Length: 187
Figure (cartoon, rainbow, N blue to C red):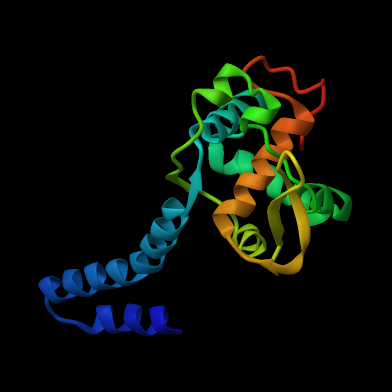
């Protein structure tokens, strides 16, 4: 209705200059929602990862033709959201693939430590899932001390939840550096 009224109004204008201004205004008005959508889509979510985790997502994306690390993480998170068994396996256990006690491979050992924020395109449901209270309390227990899940309230930390998902995928599906996903795709 709005555009029909504008169209009728543009024909009733006497000057060509007025008609051009109106047309430019209508085009600009229609472009605003498109621009907002593009900005939101390209912005993504900041996720703090170890470099080896980003390397894994890049390799997974390349091996499965996913178009980038965001879609690779999306595949892992989708699996966790849709399969209770996978969700429990990810969040009810400790998946330390980088600590010294597990003798990590060089590609992990040399790329762990400082976490960096990466902008990853994730769906709104995936972001909401990663921001939920999923993470159990973990403490070093025993002699020698070993990280273990202990009783306590669950907590929310999107970055840690994403890292848990990636470490679970590394532990369960192998590395993409040798494209050896045990002949199984996550999709």
